Image 1 (cartoon, helix red, strand yellow):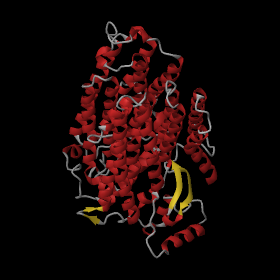
Image 2 (cartoon, rainbow, N blue to C red; image 1 turned 180 degrees about the vertical axis):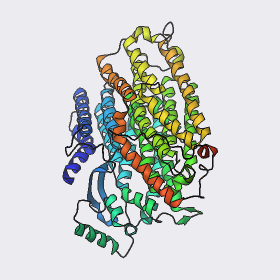
Image 3 (cartoon, rainbow, N blue to C red; image 1 turned 180 degrees about the horizontal axis):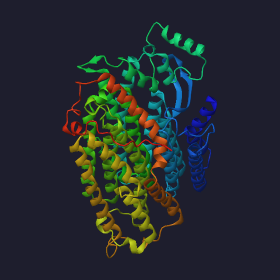
Image 4 (cartoon, helix red, strand yellow; image 1 turned 90 degrees about the vertical axis):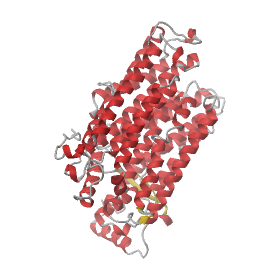
Amino acid sequence: MESSYMTLLSLIVFLPALGALALAFFPREKTETIKVFSLVVTAVVFLLTVVMALPGEGVWQFDTAVSDMQKVFSVGWIPSFNIDYFMGVDGISFPLVLLTTFITMLSMAASWPIEKHVKAYCMLFLVLETGVLGVFLALDFFLFYVFWEVMLLPMYFLIGVWGGPRREYAAIKFFLYTLLGGVFMLIAILMLYFASDLKLLNKDQLVAAHVISASAAAEEQEAQLAEIQSADDPVHTFNILALQQLGQHTEAFNSEILGKSLQWWAFLLLLVGFVIKVPSVPVHTWLPDAHVEAPTPISMILAGILLKLGGYGIIRICYPICPQAGYDLAYFVCALGVVSMVYGAFAALAQKDFKRLVAYSSVSHMGYVVLGIGVWSAVAGNNFNPDAWKMGMNGAMFQMIAHGVASPGMFFIVGIVYERVHHRNLDQFGGLFAKMPVYSGLAFVIFFAGLGLPGLCGFIGEVFVTLSVWTYSHALAVVAASVVILTAAYILWTLQRVYLGPEYKGPHGDHLTPITSRELAIAVPIAVFAIVLGVYPQSVFRYMTPSVDQTVDALAAWTEREKPAGEETQTAQRPAVEQTARVRLPHVNKTP
């Protein structure tokens, strides 16, 4: 059974890399063949994830009723340091894997206008997909870091070689910011590794971390436990699930460094590394430059997928491994999200470059993700009720999926018109609806999805996050809700300047031809999913909610054990929590 899981997940992760290797033997002048082959590879990977998503009880199907990690396998890789080729999938990672393969396939289809060094472009593109999928599926921290760094070079070259006039500057800025975050992350990984010790965990915790096989006989489990416990020295590990158990059930990461615990510093270093990728203010400045200079398909991947890696890392790693630090810094994380929301919205209002406006909108929308994750409302003052936090965490996850659909769509919409008139000056647009009615209709649907219009995908996550924050802090909730007004302002003003009005005022007006069939094949699925997710959000919640709720329940249980009554954070001392104490919110985790 484990070999079947290994085959499935390894195919999903490494098939793009194998495709890139195969492209090395293609003649470089066969550009059309290279593009078609690359598109087929991305489509096959997407179909593999679709097979997992289909309902059923087959070996490869994802079980929506299970909250634990599924399809888990572990093979020794570097035994001397206890590093394994260790992968699995759950409700937190699987929707993001499905989103990645979907957007990557559409982005490859959007790469047809690329004419320079097509072979190199497609090879780097496929290697990038392998890196992203590896991050979402890796359960060994060392393996996670390897895949994280694998993404860096392909994206650097895809921006630096195929980007706009200031592509070198944008690529170097992206590289330096991401590399800095990676260095912080590596320091935290080493801190946690050398502080870890599997001997501190009991058999049940080792089974939960897949260190001991759950399917093994009781005698075999006892033998595996005895082998770990008999070691003379601490048994260090990079196993992310084991590190979560150590962080929540032992004192392994509580040694003091410069007046703070080891996990406090590890949390901070990891948080910086992840919020650079989100990105949050003030480490967001690489994003607008990267988006403006990157070609359209790379902007689609950057907005739709790469930004989600930051939110995923915070949910999967920061909070479960370092709960004490997450508890202490909860309000800081929430404030970071709110500041990013407000700043990104105001910055978008000030832009005259169409693409830069969409880039700043990503900073604002991803602020909801950080805010929803940080709502640690399961405290003594709220009777350790985790419902509001579950709502916030589920809202944050849904917001990542919704933004992963709408934002690539917005960048593609910008790219369509840029390919025709070769400028993005909002003041020179106008009247496109009359010249390109089908394109404009799709643009309205996709931009309204980004706005958060009820009935479209952007609405659900924002509402869930805002409602959850009300139990945590009235002030933050009011600010978060007010950002919707700013979002409507810059989206509606943009639509008015570009698509309405009497006539187009810029150059190359005769090039504003109707949308092509290839462009329709990319834009229509995005618009359809934006509507489906808005009308039927349970299509996503049914996959993610059990695992998200389990994560929140584990952290709420830790809070009740470690912070029983007078040890409130600044959060629990706020009137917002006191006034809503013992008020139970309706569960959002119902699955059919």
